Amino acid sequence: MPIITIALKEGRSQEQKAKVAQEITRIVAENMDVDPSKIWIRFDDFSPKDFATAGKLHG
Image (tube, rainbow, N blue to C red; front, side):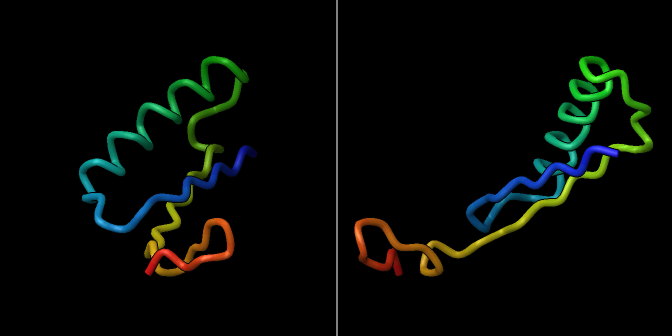
């Protein structure tokens, strides 16, 4: 059972996530010969303030 995690900056709509989930499920099912019902996709929304680059927080 593939479990796919997608990290996104907060603000994407449920419709956008649904569209991405459909496409990723289709691609994984076709290319890995997996039943689509066995593919799990998890969206992790994050705030830019929770990340740092070069030692400096973004928020």
